[in-house]
Length: 304
Image 1: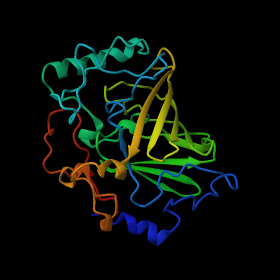
Image 2 (image 1 turned 30 degrees about the horizontal axis):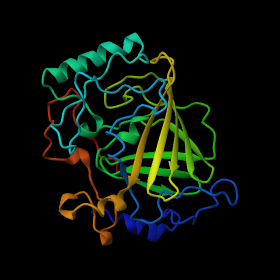
Image 3 (image 1 turned 30 degrees about the vertical axis):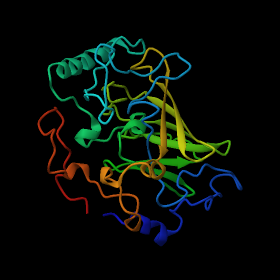
Image 4 (image 1 turned 180 degrees about the vertical axis):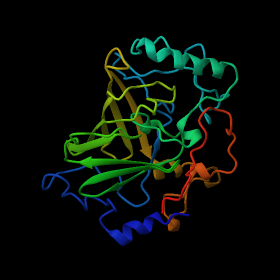
C-alpha cells in the first residue's frame, strides 16, 4: 500500500491544505482547493452522466457519443453492460477519421473487445483524462509551480504548470504540455497542446492530429463537493469545427460514506492514506489479454 499521506507530512509543500499555498501566482490570490485534506479524492459523478465526454447542455457541436442503435451501458448502472459503438454521423468528424472508427465499431458488433486505454493500461491523453476511469479516484498535489493530478487506476499522472506560457517548441507526448492559471477564486483553467496522436480523444477511439488544442475549466462548487468541467476542443486536422464537452467530479470521501465498505475494495483505510498502489500493467489476472491489438505495456529494461 502506498503511504501517500506520509508524502504530505515529509515534504510539507506537497500537501494542498486549506489555502496553505495561497501564494501561487499573484500574491494573495484566492484559489480553489481541490485537496483540502490528504484524504480528498474525486470520482466521476455517475448521477451526472456516463464515463464519457458529455455533450454541452446548451447544444451546439459536441463530442462523439454512442450510436443510438447501440446504446452504451456502463458497469454498475443496473442494466446489461455494453461496449461502446461510436456515432459516426457526428458532424464534427472529418472523413478520414471515420474508417478506423467504423472498423472498431464492426469489431465490437462482431463480439470482440475494443481498445480502451484504462483496460489496456495505456495513457489516455487529453481531453479523455477527465473520463479515464469509471470508479477509480483522482487526487491533487499542488506546489507553487504546478498541479499534479493522479488517477489511481493506472496510475496515470498529469502535470499542469502554473502561471507560465507554453514552451516555444513542444515535443508531442501522451498528455502534451498543460499550462494553467486560476480564475475567480473557484476555477482552474488549463490550456494543453502537443498531445501525441498516438492517443485517442475519447473512449470511442476518435483520432486526432498534432494540431489538437484543448482548453479545460475545472470549477469547484461553493460547497466543495463537486467539480464541474467544461472542455473546448479544436483540431483543424481532424475536426470540421471546434466543439465543447462537459463532465463532473464529486468528492470521493463524501461519496463513499454512503456505500458499504465491502463494496469499495479500492478505498484505502485512513491510516494507510487515500491513494492505493494500483499498478495496472502488473495485473496478473487480466481478462483482456490478446483480446485487442495493443498489448499491456511492459518495460524492456529497468528505469532505475
